[in-house]
Image (tube, rainbow, N blue to C red; front, side, top):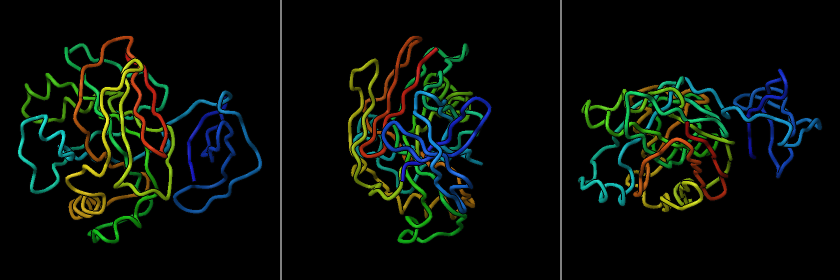
Length: 250
């Protein structure tokens, strides 16, 4: 399925997206729900983030090409950091460049949305805990990341975690084309088969540290080609079978 969360006037709901039609969902996509016959055209609704995570867990340096680009050895374990829920931004929203940074950059990523509570998950069972995939942009204040020596400030500004527009289920997450377009020009292009740690390994590793809850988002790392965002830019993350996340830069 292709789940979205949307607003129509003051009405907020989950929906099932097919083409340009959104069918209203009654219930909770993480528990029990019903797809109704009530529908809207996408032109009538505002996209919200497709879920409301309790936490956004990010995996750094998880593409072989990006490790090579950064002149860094392949990690022996997944490198983790967190983004706060307040950094979340919906499809179509504005990425706000903070005054304290002079170098804000994009990072196209596959996002995984957890579907049920999990702790100490085995790698081979991890896929059963994933509801689906979404497009994710790990926006980063690169100058602050270098200055601080750790990543919290650089990764945590409001609007620095755009994801959406939807959650797509039943995919092979370890073999999806991913690319980023900046003002219509391709800047990143890869496939998740270049992961250093596959999805099962990532989810299992994270679950041994922190309990995963329905709606939590795992951003799985970015391929080579990261670059700068400037005011007025339009940035798009495109992932095969998942969709296109489009945001504007202020």
